[in-house]
Length: 172
Image 1: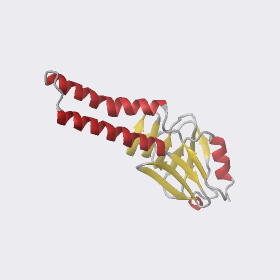
Image 2: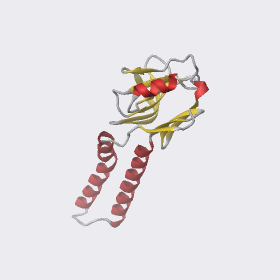
Image 3: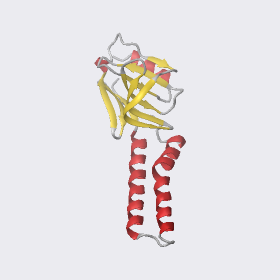
Image 4: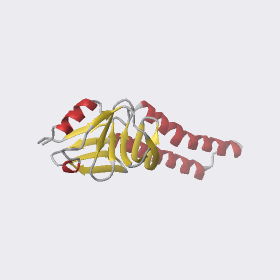
């Protein structure tokens, strides 16, 4: 595998954008509107500046996080994630005897450190029944399970799950 394969996991999708808008941005704008209303229609300069700055920060960081989610396979490692949540595993830590399989049902437990919103699950999760996983799932119908020898499993949702499974099974 001489040329690295870099795959966007499409975290910037309609579901994740709507979640960012409704969870992160809209409540602040509503709070600003309420503050103006409570001040008899006169905008509060400091509150307006604070809210607009916070909205811009949340939207900017949210977009950066969504755009940066990807998977990269090079000659020596598999890297999954983006933004604040990323994991890199040497290919030899996947092991030749480790089964890499496409799975439709996965049982994730509690999120221990990551993002969970419509259109994106990213970060560290517990697995129901024991164990932990690093997850980068944007499409629940295209999930690939990649066990590692380091005590955790990677769940990722590429556009072509079968091609990823085939590539990892036949790596050098």
